[in-house]
Amino acid sequence: MSLPFCFFLLFLMLSISNVFAQQDDINTARQYIKQGASFYIKEEYQKSIEYLNKAEVIANKLKNDLLKVSISTWRGHVYLQEGEYQKTLSYYYYSLDILERIGDLDREIIALSGLVTVLKRMGQLDRAHELTLKMLKLTDNASFKNKFNHAAVIATANEIYIALEEYDSVLYFADKGIKIAKNIDSKSLLVHLYVEKGMVFYHKKKYKEAFEYLLKTEALLQNHEIINESFPTALTYYFLASCYYQEQSYDTAILYLLKVINAAKEKDLTKMYVIQCYLLLANCYGEQEDFEKALYWNNEYMRLNASYEKEKDGTANVIYEKESEKLLENIEHLKNKQAKDEHIKKYTYGISGFLTLILITVGFTYFKKQRSNKQRFENLMKKINELESKEDMTTVKKEGTKSLVIDDEKVVEILKKLDKLVDEEYFLKKECSLQSMAKKLKTNASYLSKIINTHKKKNFSAYINDLRIDFVIDRLHKDTKFRKYTIKAIAQDIGFNTSEAFTRVFHKNTGMYPSYFIKELEKRSKS
Image (cartoon, rainbow, N blue to C red; front, side):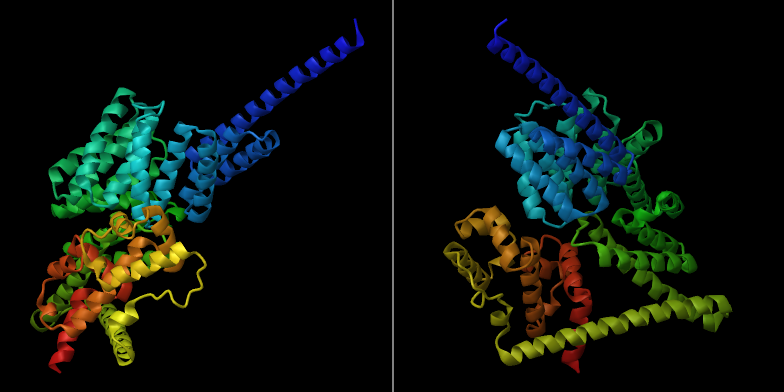
């Protein structure tokens, strides 16, 4: 045998050996990823990360892009559940960068699905909606069309449509998803899609239909093993309780809410879908005139919500914010009702010392809040007066760009045009959206969103809402006729679709409700 041929055989043997060794490494990495996914499903997130780290060592050694994508995407899923949204974003974007380079459509859709979810939780609904449309379009060409991942993508898309209150879109896509889930016999997907339909019918005040789908969800949760069941269970029970509350079946509503609270772990007490149960529970007891329990659960809600607000890292829970506002107003009404009833009892039948103590506590809480509202109002009026003494509020209101040193001429041009649109009060129009504004500025929505985030230091929704609230505060202060409008009419006049959305944003920006602000302005005018 010739020497060159011997070298060739030796090289061939080494090559075959390396191939087998590499394949062994790939299989080992895949096993680590599988174990990481398994611990994710069990909600043991720390262990999940440990196994993903082991897989990453192998993926980096092999320089295997597909392994890197799988690891990064699963990490994004884990940190999403942990509420660490900046890490979540970085891992999803890392996956998408690789996938766009290597052209793997299926994995790109899965990474987009995770990205949409985290953007929704961070309140960036415009960007989330934009990516949702892209994700749904890509799914038509995916290999998993009409399979598990297709229905999962639909369920994720529906979260965005619920947050945007596009309920007809939710029902349309939910029916498509349910058909797929039934064909592949996926109970986990049916749970998510049924509860989404139940939520929509609840928001539409069609409680009979809401009960139909929520009770179907409950039956599936009780009779089948569902992946990550704690969240859909809490969501189902909360909206069942909400439906029973609307039908004045307070005892049944209380039973469902206590199921959520009793099953909640320590880490769940920072999640809005659990915190909200405390507030609804307080309302149920309030409606039953059990004010001791109502006060207790309301105080627990206030404590947990304060902790959540402190740590939430810019997240948004649109599903619950609307309900919170109504329930908080109900609590205030019940407190006032209690105070009135106890006052009558004091002079007619007498009152026990214990109820007197409760009345004093509630009164103290109420007046403390009133005093706090009064202080907020005075601070706001002081700010308005200071601004007016310097220059017209519409000039001050603009977030100028002249002081910024910006090298990019295109960015400067867009910022100037943006200021011009603000001067024209385009932000008051209902059709004002990221897409419509981008079209007027002759740029694309993604680029405009990035500019606003960078130079206005807030996302598009917050930017528009801040402009609207600044405008309405100024107009209510100056225009006595405008104060006579209903809250609904004011909301529509400044571009909000609903009075609830306007009230929520006004309260978030000022710490008080618009009705209170108007009332105090009227008092000041008369005095």
